[in-house]
Each structure stands twice: as structure tokens, then as C-alpha cells.
Length: 539
Ligand code: BG6
Image (tube, rainbow, N blue to C red; front, side):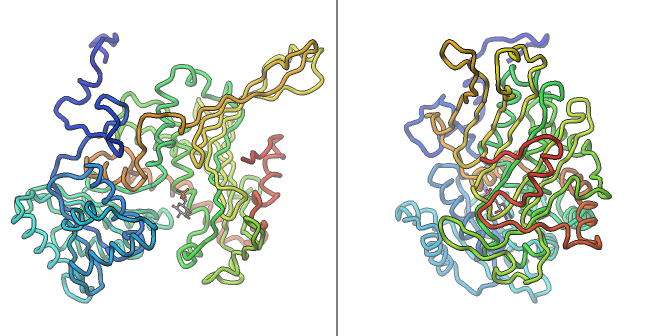
């Protein structure tokens, strides 16, 4: 705590932070109040309306997240969940359907007692898409339920549907009054939307315009699930809660940065979506650019959603426009061919069900980008993501510069490796710092050693799964982990010309390098870095 002159003053921080709020421990009753894993209990009683209530996302993630929050007292009291979908079903039938599918999909044995208590809050409404106002019925039902249970009309609307349906559903919900914060409802209304937010700048702007016809920007919560990962959130703490890194976090000391999100999974059952999206829309426009922004942003003056989002947007605005006339010097696209993974053969992307056998959709990309500002001028950021790669790993590797004067050159045969800091986002979450030490002995020999911090070694605190975290934050009205309209549009403004150039160039085929599944991507990506005198990091 600081006084008006900026001087630090003593205080009981736990006490001051929790005045006027209820605090609960999540997931671990052994944690004491005052421990480091306190969350604020969402105090506003509310209804959670899930559109697409029978879909994959709802069954796999949303209901499970709600159930876990319920078990850990992370939901308000009272609350109700209204599932809405096209399937003709009763509430009883819906409760059984969800219970079964959670069991089948997640393999979880639900704790009967908790499940029964939770299920009593679950309701279902069938939507008739042919009706003039398909959501009127659900609105009337919800108002009635809320009134009779004495719950204020707060609503969290979760759009768990394919993005092609967003506009139609938002219009339907809007017309049925779901967005209104008026006396009739008597409470707030918030809407959660999943990526992708459009497929280029124009469609993202159109989508935002349609959303804003009914919902104000502060009612909109756009999810990028990477932002909800503990280790991604920790990036800001690491950079800005420690004094020792910021002075060297710039072009004077950093040679380059590699941001990698490698997956072992292939396209799975998502070929219809993926054929239209490809790696640049699927991973770069959102997750990778968010990681870049958090690595490169300036410290905001206060840890508050809009101040943090402002700083991230400044990074997007400072991205050097991609040199689309020299695409192959700054961008490598790849697509996985057949290969071996975990000792078994896996098919090529083009042989996956639903994929065109001549498909030119990239499943891998490496891009070299620059940020034109004082801090980062001239520092390359190598952004890389791919499917069917050798290992699943997401990390940010910061390669520092060589020491300015090689004072050991007369006694050392080998080169000195520059320092490297690696922030491993997943799996095996950790932070490692590599530096040089002397090998014990009479001769002067150096060896790099690694200082390792593993998150799993921290005893306190229970991480929330990404979906639990985003739902909880939305209930609390905290936009910190959600993407703002201008952020979405800035990212598209950077990427749309690249996509245009790639998809409309004459030699589209030549841009695409095949790589065997189970490898680190096409050799051309290594060459891109070699050309700059640098080495592609493999985890
Ligand atoms: C999603 C992409 O946003 O992120 C998927 O659509 C990708 O294609 C997934 O597999 C990766 O998420 P995670 O959390 O497994 O790294």
C-alpha cells in the first residue's frame, strides 16, 4: 500500500484486500484463510443461460466447470442454469443426458450427493429456430423462475455454438430482451463468446457491430482460453512483481524471443472448421498474439482490466506491418504429412476425415515479427505453432545477447552460450534460467547450468481450470482475461494482409512445406532462423 506521496506504508494486506468481500478457498479445504489462493465469491445471484446446451463444448467443458465451481462454492447463491438448444427434451431428460455425457466424456465419477444438489439448479428449454422469436419462450420462463425463487434478474449468457451462428443467436437473444438491463429484468446481463471472432478484419468488425446492436462492449466477454492459464497469468506477475527483470527486458539485453505453441494432436474431428481456418486463424490471431503482447507490453500503472488491455493493444498497434511482398523470408507455412507418433503411424492432414485431399490449409506456421517501439526495435520475435509436432509444449524463450567482451577468449576453447530464460506455459509448467558456471577443476572450463522453478513445487494454491476461471471472472464482472473489441480488430488488422497474401498468391502451393507428423515442423522454419544466425529451439 502506498500513501499519497508514493511511499510504502505498512498494512495488513489480507485484511485490506478482503474488506467488504467474501473470500473462499478453492478446491482445498486445508488451505487457511489468509493463504495465497483466496478467490472472491461471486456475490450476485444469477442465471447462467447456455445456448448450445447439448453441444460438445457444453458437455465437455462448461457444465463440468460449473459443477466444479459449485462444489468449491464458486457459484452464487442462489443460481440457476438454463440450457437451451434445438433438441426436444424435458428438464429431467436434460439432467440425465448431461450426467451421462460428463461421465462418458470425462470419465469422471461424479459425486452423487454433489451432483444431485447441482442438478436441481439445471433447467432446459427447447428452442424452435423457425419461430418468429425463438428465444421469447426462454426469456419468459427465466423471468418467471427468477421471480419465483426471489433471484434478481442477473444473466450470464454463454454462446456455446459454432461461430457461424453467433449473429443469428445474438439477434434472437437481443430481440427477446436478454441483453436488457432494465426494471423488467432488474439486473445485469453479460454474454460470453468463444473464438474465432470473425475470419478477417472485415468480418470481425461486422460481428462486433452486430453484437453492439444489443450488447454494450462492457457486457461482452470474449474468451481466449490461453489467458486463463495460470502460467500465462503469471507472466505479468513475473515481469512486473519482480524488480530484477524489467531493466534487462528490452533490445539492449535481449537478442530475440521465440514463442512456441506446439501440439501433438492433429485436426481431430474439426476438419470443417479447420479447413477454413488453418493455423494462422486458429492459433496466431488469438493465443500466439496474446502471448506476444503479454511478453512485450509496457507495465500498466495499475493491475486493472482496461489498463492491462490498453497496454496489450499498444503492442498490437506497434507490430511492424508484415512484409507481404517478401512472405517467404518472414513466414514459413507447413502441413503435416503422415508420420510416426508414440510409436504408431498417423495419417497426413490431407487424409484426415473431412479434409480435401488437395488441401492447402497450413497446420504449421513460423513468422518472424518485429515491434516498432523503443523497447523492442530490432528484436525479432519468432512465433511458431503447429499440429502433430514432436512434443506438446507452449513456451516463451527469451534469448539474451552475448556478453559484450569475451574476456575468457584466451583461456576458453569453446564459445560462451548466452543466457536463456524460458517460461514454460504447458505442460510441465516451469521457469528456467540458463547461465554459465565454471566446471570444478584446475583448468578454466565453463558449462551452462539451468536454474529451474517448477510450479508443481509450490504447495499453496489450487489452480482453476481455464473454463472455471473464465466463468468465475465473468460472474465477477472482471474483464481482465477477456479480449476487447479493439484488441480483436488490431490483431486482424495485422494478420488479414498476411492471410490475403498467402491465400491469393499465384504460388500458394510453393508456400506450403510438408513435414512429417511427429517432427518439429518443416526444415524451412529452421532455415528461416539460421538465415538470421539463430537456432530454432526444440523443447
Ligand atoms: C484452440 C484451437 O483454441 O486451442 C485448437 O482451436 C488447439 O486447435 C487448442 O488445439 C490448443 O489449446 P491448448 O490449451 O491445448 O494448448
